[in-house]
Length: 91
Image 1 (cartoon, rainbow, N blue to C red):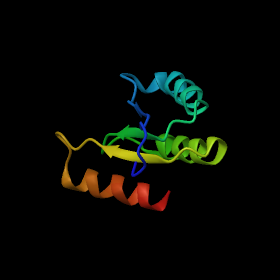
Image 2: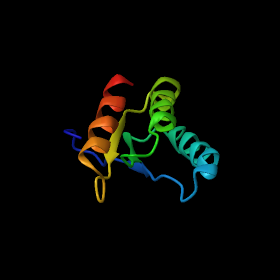
Image 3: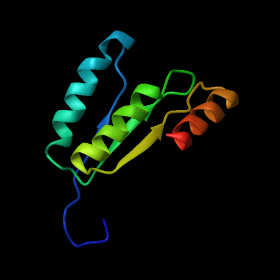
Image 4: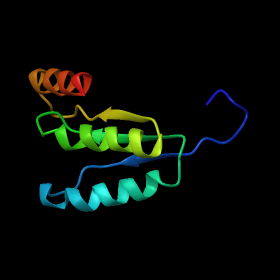
């Protein structure tokens, strides 16, 4: 980002239904193959972040693309946020 060049990033949003995660995963891995500068994965406290933690790890290891967590806190409880942050830190 500090270089004098364009930066390309992608955001990965959770699916509307949990059963659609496989589609999100396939799309995210396909995008990672283009080697963007980084990818942002949206996570919602109170929902399982384990799949997204694993996806972020796979993107980083397989494609060498840095990932960042975008934690959506609207309507989330303090405990849900604490748990999500702890899960991401452990991952």
